[in-house]
Length: 261
Image (cartoon, rainbow, N blue to C red; front, side, top):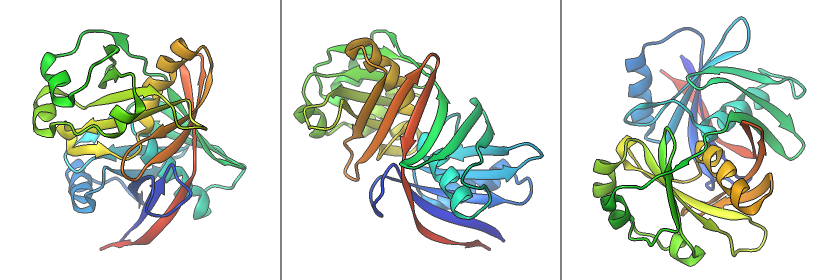
């Protein structure tokens, strides 16, 4: 049997933030098995964690595909390791992943993830993408994962109703849409759409903030931000840009735990 948990990440309330499944493995399993479990869980991400001699191996799967970087499922994994006593509160987690070594540590106000920055380069995007989003962009670009589109008004971002069928055909992974925040307490807000990997809209996307942190650093001339992802569930991420790394701080809560038979 494999221990499995469902965690709501980047929130301190159950049924908010972004849900992820976390599987604690005792041995190596096949890629097909992990993909089947992720499809069965039908969450935006399912994380698979295996203890190594030094640190942990960590992989992430959507219901449709494996991904190279996932913030909320890493936060969920770290939460499980601390909550279940696999790691002590003063121990740092080291994860071997397809995006290199990632770390997590427990703070008084949440868990801090240390991720690589994934800045976007200014670039034109397909006209079909802008049409599918139905936005008037201020700036467009792309990093190795996603398109990035900046728009001017928070109200427009909150009421976006993209054409997911068209986005699925245009994107490899997803598209981040962002604007400066008008809501007090936040510096910028965003939404993330990834129908190409089986997620029409991701509730809260840590990896997107590895792009958003450097982007807003260049505009607002600051290194630390409080960000809000304006999905239906919503979530809060504290972001700090340090050289070529992005620190993401968030909270998480356990919703359920059990065994995969």
